[in-house]
Image 1: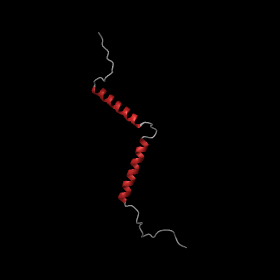
Image 2 (image 1 turned 180 degrees about the vertical axis):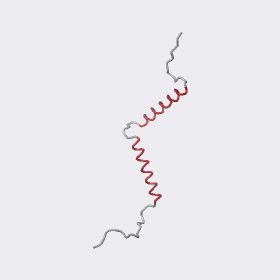
Image 3 (image 1 turned 45 degrees about the vertical axis):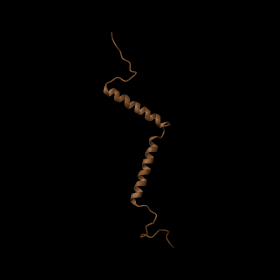
Image 4 (image 1 turned 180 degrees about the horizontal axis):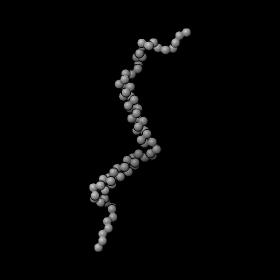
Length: 76
């Protein structure tokens, strides 16, 4: 009876080297990360716009100057 295993000394010719495998694994990980970051979001563009608006408002508040459209109270 024979075994269906390759000889221990044989290395398959079509197997990629370690560097190629590492690059492919890194690309796959980045792809999974991109896909998981937008999971459940119907419109990623609107989310980015809201995030930018929020950062802009926080920056204006930290600078201490009033933003446009902000009401001012005056006492006379």
